[in-house]
Length: 191
Image (cartoon, rainbow, N blue to C red):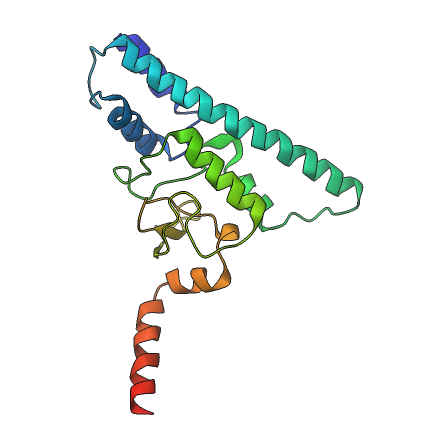
């Protein structure tokens, strides 16, 4: 069992939608085993693997559609990738597709459902809510690198791809947005 558990962890090095640590925490919580549990119930481990495989199938289907769309665009002379394409390039392979800024805070949904919602939002265009949990409050995260920079949903902890959020939602999430709103309210009260 310990070797099977280890093998599941190794799978997450290739495909971990929330990031490696957050996806492992998600699987542990959803399937009722501990992070360091070496003597697992085999049925729980298989259920966790099934969840990862279903999510990977959803992601691979999206990647096939993405590749077909890009081929059509290139044939038409559209060589410059758009914002969604740039986001896709950084998440190639499905690692960190719905990255969670905090490994202990992630959606409670099955991985496949979270990916379906995110993909639907990418294909639909910008909106004002989190595509995974429909939350409307975001905080800006920046850890000094490019990988984990952007609006994080305060509800489910997902680092939301900028192309799925409207300009207003992005502006509200940026650092200093709350202070600017407070200043505008104070000026309106004085004026």
